[in-house]
Structure formats: C-alpha cells, structure tokens
Image 1 (tube, rainbow, N blue to C red):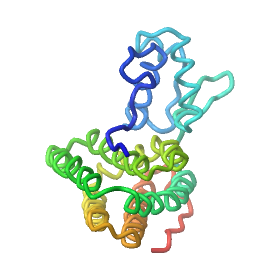
Image 2 (image 1 turned 60 degrees about the vertical axis):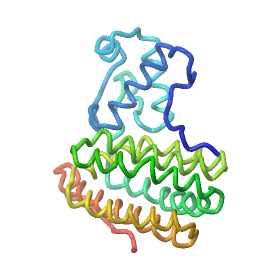
Image 3 (image 1 turned 180 degrees about the vertical axis):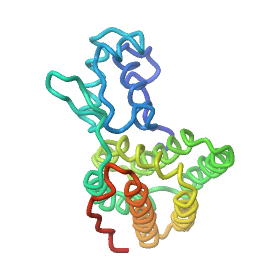
Length: 240
C-alpha cells in the first residue's frame, strides 16, 4: 500500500507534454481560485498567457471539463465552473458518502506503520503552513491527504471516485482556509479524525470523518451566503 502519490503528471518521471503542462497549470489556477469561479476564458487568451499553442490548451480544457472544473460555452469559450449553493450541496452530498467510507476502510486495511506515516507526513507540514498563513499549501495538503487515504484503502475504484471530486473540493478548501473561524473548526475536527485513525478505530474514524465533512459543509455554505450573487438563495443546512 502506497501513501506517497497524489496529483502528479500522467507520465510520472517522463518529461511532461505541453498538454500535461497546460492541464496542470490551469488546474492549479482553478483550484486555488486564481481563475475565479464563474470567470470566462478562451483558448486564445489562455494560449497567450501560458505561451502554449492552441492544441495543448484545448486538450487541457477538455480534461478539465470532464473533471467538472470548467464548462463549455458554445461559441463563447469556456467558463470556470461557478460555485453555487446547489453545486456545493451536491458536492458535499457525495463527499458525505465517500469520505466516511474512506476513513473507515483505511483504518481496516492500513498497517500501524502506514497510519503513523500519515501522521508524520502531515502534522508538521500542516502546522507550518497554517503558521505561515499559506493557503495554497493548506489546500494542497488537504487534497493530498484525502487522495492518499483513498489510495490506502486498496480499493482502486473508490480512490478514482474521490480523485474525480478532489478538484472541486480544493476550491471549497480554498474558501474555508481563508476564513479564520472555519479554519479553527476544521483543525479541531481534523485532529479528532487523525486520533481515531491512529487508534485504529473504524467506527470512530467513520464518525469523525462525518463530523469533519459536516463542519466543512456548514462553514462553506455560510461563506457562500455572504456573496451578493447568492445571498437570496434558499439554504438547508445538513443534519448533524
């Protein structure tokens, strides 16, 4: 079981293709909201900004479309997929199914050494990133933690399903980590999750994953409700 992977170039140690370079660059900008939710872009605009040809940009946008991070606007280019109350609710509905299953199954399948490896891998890095107020590093760590836990289950399909969601979740993490109240609440829930993981308690791990996701969902909706564009939307908070 390997816990060292995450989002890497498709060719591993091989040189990246221009399409891979375009994809990874655009994905990083989207998940860190440097390309803002709802922003419209064109192939020519992006090719000029990244100094890449139209074909690599087009191939990258097709991949990002398949991941739900952009959507095609016929004859008008592309739009970074907006964050809305509905889309965030739908995202968390799926994560509330996958996340607890990942936490429970990882505890059942990972060895003591592997669980301790996860703890060592993140404890110092997360603390340092938070102390330095490095939101991009926090997003990357949160994303890679869940991807690696999913991979540690040994269930390839489950890992693929989570990876499919991870880009959209990264954008939500970015919002959450910029809010001090949300960040404090998530770190508390995160600590409980790791404690049950290290204790090899599957039921407690599932329960703490559910709590972590519920806390993230509630704070994400609270932040979105402050946006003028969605302030009038009807919101139903998840049952704790």
